[in-house]
Length: 388
Image 1 (cartoon, helix red, strand yellow):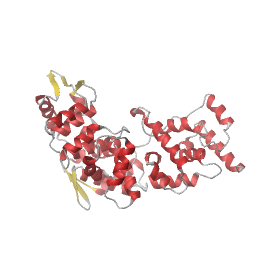
Image 2 (cartoon, helix red, strand yellow):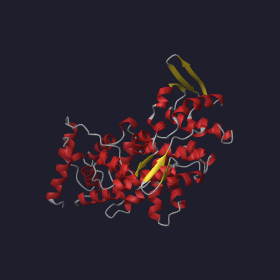
Image 3 (tube, helix red, strand yellow):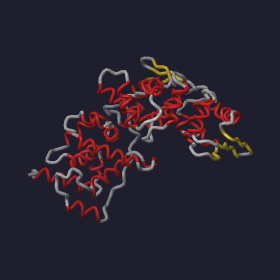
Image 4 (tube, rainbow, N blue to C red):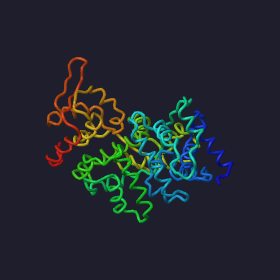
């Protein structure tokens, strides 16, 4: 029989969640609530703490591959499936609602039901779910930290990935072909690469085709860094907030990166050193910066047309007319450290090459018109042998 104290505790954490208790919105509380549905008759709070220690935060736990989760003592297939189910549900939420809010949405959809079928459904919880529930507004946290980088490995291996297959098949390929000796490390890095290179959750042919066209070249490093920033917005934040203000000097200290993270997440956060190191490694892997022991050096870069075309048609996915200022002010474009004086000339060059339709600069109206989607742009580059 379920211990009455544990049973009462589980009902209390469910009720607190439904009633909008702010303390029920912490990463630990959310994980504890989730795990209570897949692991009956056991205190799951220590397991929730262990998962957060292993994967940094709830987003990291949900994004982790099922195989990696199952290697954590206490996590069986039933719990791994539940966590991946919530991960899948949160990916269905529109991108502008992503982050902690979408995780709460996913948890709320799952947590009203007993998925384990080993513990009787809680009638009071079911009745509460049918009533008007006072849910406290979600406080958005800063962009999540990340570690390790894995960008260097992604750039090296993407040209070898088969250009057809599901996310699971690509993960299996990566697990078999990454250079690490440890199977566990290969599994973890396979998850990092898939998550960061394919942030929409599905494997897309344009990136893999682009990777095969530009293996070992800066164009591929550019596009991989762009995808990284879309998956890990903190990376773009660090470039725009830290590097761009210092572009005239061209150097910042590593300590400045740690201080920046401390201001966003709290100076005592235990993952700051690892995340700071991952940011520097990402900049170096993308060739945006060079690194010394105490500092990193950087400067504006020339724009290469193939990677510019890839980023342009990713940011403006549907053919149509767009304001040039939207491109110039795009945070993702700024994060590329492309020379801003070269953006407009590069647009004209894409027009001259027939990749975009036209550019209009009449009085205060500055617009460009695209005619292709990303896959068509990459196919054009392939037909042209990698030339824009």
